[in-house]
Image (tube, rainbow, N blue to C red; front, side, top):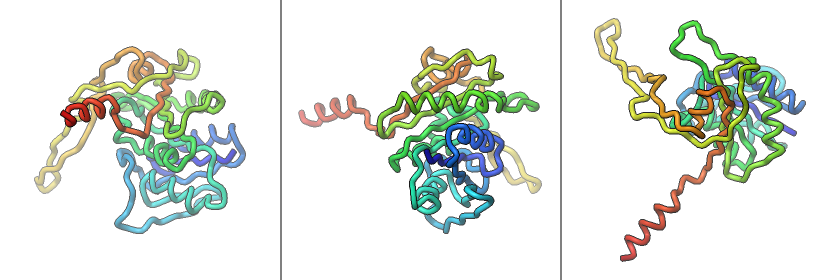
Length: 255
């Protein structure tokens, strides 16, 4: 099995090393194509107004000056043009990607692009406490639990046009309570905040941030699962059409 590993935290991110380790437990044909710099929040964006730069760092490890989406396209169409990967793994992200996060996340975008290209794809993220200055992600949790989870997911299978969003809770490996297949949760509307500041010349600038506790922990959602110490696996559909609304609108317009 040929595995492509990417991320949005950049080629030097600790979570990328963790994901390489996970992938190496599943296959000896592992390739890494990741962004040159941190692309967190890039979502499913493409670089269209400037050229892409590809840099080979080691055997089977490349950096792209671009977004996670650029990386997957470059990997499949250029680096691995002789044989496409069988699996795309994106992550392990430093911080959870839950609920509304999936629309902003470059980690999710790597898995979206893989899915669009007809490749089974999984995004993986590691929750941790942003509010604690000394807090660091518990990388041992995905390191020890990741390969077995992915193996089991591959055995179970999932339909085309679906990607899997995996989030590990902020717990040590032996503190994980289990695995829940979840639905996408919903944060409160004030989960994003804007901080206004002044630079050294007195000119205002603004910084986006998150209100960490702003979430609705409805049972069965990704937010609830990770908060309660479970690994969350959320199947995400690339088809964003809401069919019930389609029918209702058509009925109204036919009158």
